[in-house]
Image 1 (cartoon, rainbow, N blue to C red):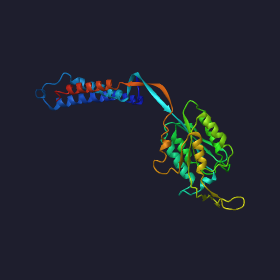
Image 2 (cartoon, one colour):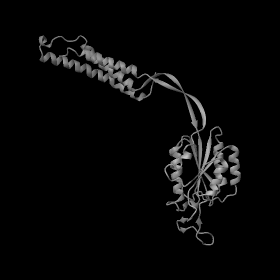
Image 3 (cartoon, one colour):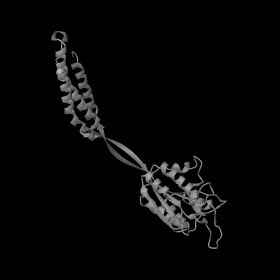
Length: 316
């Protein structure tokens, strides 16, 4: 016999005190009745009356046992798990500071990533990148923790200016290959500005391993300046830099790996093609579930309450 809420059993320590209280109240009742009512007027009393305090005490004790959730025996239930892995790759280069979509590209990208995380039914990892990638969160089922880390991300925090898609996707592929038995995909969120030289190798590797890479564009082709703490970003010649979104690069990545390309998915259902990633390898397992037996002590408690009620008949 095991108990689901064993700490409730501590209430049994109060049962002896309840028994003493009920027994003393019964004696007081009888003494008062004999003092104020003559024996002839009191009428017949139930012979079971003396059992009433003990019946109520047993009912109280059994109710406490039922409250503790007793269980005995187990049933085995087959369960099928379908777990997927998803690696979100987020561009945090300085171009993501541009505000050509009503807010900064990074703010919009983080909002999109949050929607993907909250809709996930599998494990998630988060990688940020500039010229080099950096792991923010390894594969985990704790979506709340990933969201907390996502909220803390700032543009330029990696400290290596530029955007190298090839290096970022290679790092994401390593995360995927850490759990090769589980279906996985990669989601790249960026404005499409790639300044690296290894993208072709990363795409070939993803195709060979069967890893789809979906891409999400944030930004416009009209472009925008890049606000910095000391004014707009300038190049080495002192000219103001204008950054432009490049959907063609992200379309190439998605098309080469069997992924999905989405541009500025701000409407309510724009992300639905990625939220539908629900497949995964089926894993069968058996779960042993304890069988609740609280009905037994609870039924006995009601029985003793009924006995106490019957014993109360004939009371003065």
